[in-house]
Image (tube, rainbow, N blue to C red; front, side):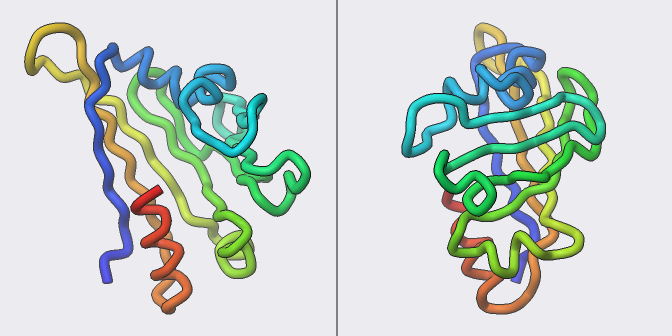
Length: 142
């Protein structure tokens, strides 16, 4: 089993704007598709700052990344943070030590017309049991 998820996307913006889409609460709220309107993100873009996303207002402590912290950051280049899973994976994923870990890289692209950024997301720290594989498969699609 491969224990790392690596996803990539190309965005039509510069790396600073792409970085902003992952680090500014209102910007994250603008593209993050969740089952309710309103605030989904509480992010403090600094080492040790919050990286908290909320999927359920009524159950903020059970269906969120509450308590997750930023572990590394360089403006316009990358951000790294801890990650927790939704309710169905909470029992094992959200109590792991260490938690799973996400690093997002923002790489300028000169290909084609206009300004583009290649965004690479690397999610690591997956366990090897069948329940961990189910969680990994979920996040690879999500």
